[in-house]
Image (cartoon, rainbow, N blue to C red; front, side, top):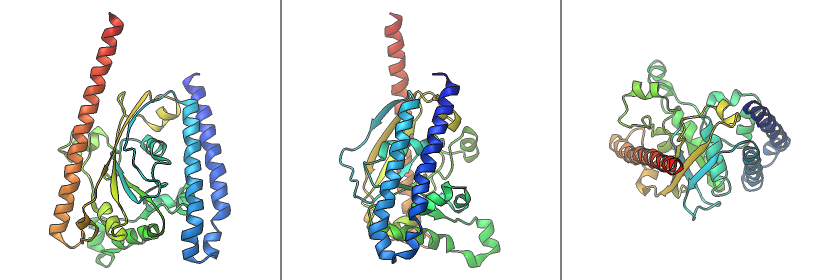
Length: 307
């Protein structure tokens, strides 16, 4: 199958999948405004999460049909589909979202991503994310807060309100701590101490922990590596992602981080950032090791073929 035909088939299947499941979501969404909040949380939320999981399963289906990707996945065997998790990963491409959904679907509760407030305006998908209770975040820059000091703390309130609805049913909340996709130019501008990562931004994680209290039982720490280079979304749709390596571990969240004041307690903030920095150091070394081992295996295979 040529790359062009692959892209056409994959795009058509992706589009059909979006339209089908979004139509179902939009038919059920008005019920959220009719029923009492507690009924919505206990009755409707599981239904919406089931729809979301089915949507992802269908994505995995058309990916298997159109892609020849080799998946190298290692993850804990005791993950709980009825648990509460905070999920984090390095971020390199829009393909990361499909990778994480494919790998974690059914292993933990339906994955919900932190999204920028502006994304709610995206046609169809923005409304679908809203219906599925994806947390929309509104963060203010330091320059904006300098001009509008009355808005200080509003972003924290937004985060807390977005997360409070997750207290009623098992949830996995996903956040790319780097805040943006990795590129060499961004890495150079940051002068980051990491070889394969951007600097993590821990504020959103801290605010979510504060809002959820002790609900989050652990952090699901994901590392994604594309040995043949970071793919674009176009590469993905054309079937040009030959290999994906995913390593997942479960990390306990210290109880103290569920109770502190990240915004106003300087000592707590420094300790929390130090914990995240240590996790990022380990992740960067893990990526270095994965790339080295993968290159060695490739060299060994080529040597065997040559002989």
